[in-house]
Amino acid sequence: MKIIKNFSIEGKHQKPIVTDVFYNETHQPKKVVIFCHGYKGFKDWGAWNLMAEAFANAGFFFIKFNFSHNGGTLEQPIDFPDLEAFGNNNYTKELDDLASVIDWIFNTNEYKNEVDLQQVYLIGHSRAGGIVLLKSNEDSRIKKVITLASVCDFGKRTATIGDLNQWKKEGVKYVVNGRTKQNMPHFYQFYENFIQNKERLDIKKATEQLAIPHLLIHGDSDTSVLIDEAENLQLWNPNADYKIIKNADHVFNVKHPWKQKDMSKEMEEVVNLCINFIKK
Image 1 (cartoon, rainbow, N blue to C red):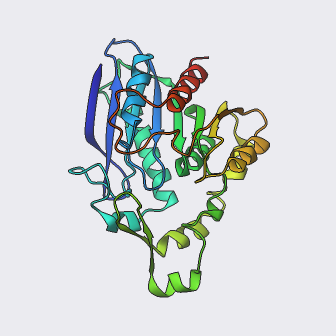
Image 2 (cartoon, rainbow, N blue to C red):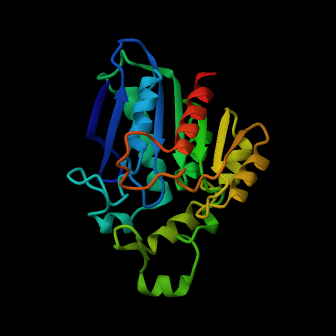
């Protein structure tokens, strides 16, 4: 298996999009799967590398990346050395970053014998579930979309609501990362960006208009994004393939760091569902 890690794709926002690809070199065109991590996430979190290997072994060309403003850097792509960048992240930057990754795989010559650009698929976890639904609705190059433990409404997220007057006055509010113990900033621009782009960031509208197959996966023990958000997505797109993972939490019973050689049983179930959905 070929694994190329931590190379940089240039985006629109002056920070590198740190990217990995996983594939078996066969000089045959393969379906392309692009994976997007969630809020306070990164491409190497938990068992995402094991997931990438599983997709490559199943015959896919698998791409995963860090959003340019997720707080990681090229030198340190794991965790959050650049909290200034994290505070300056917003939803439209994430949409732009994803567009840059899609454009890159369409325009690079490096892998042209390995990829089938007629078959490009998106997977998004948590907040990125919303991002991939929005992008799939705006970009006709995407042929199927998968959401894992996805949010259904950016307007309801804690990053978007709260004491707006206080936030505006101070210019920043902080969220504690329970694992790294960092105080992670959200600058007020996050809210302003959401309001300015409310129409474009409407997940409900994007889901209702989705013209491609959608696989919707959620754990029934998710306490971070409750399962009723998945039920809303299914309501808005009754054609979606909806799978509930029994006893699975928000990250399908994986944690970071993940020292085991295998994925959790629940994560394995998720990956198998995804692979079968894309193959059919």
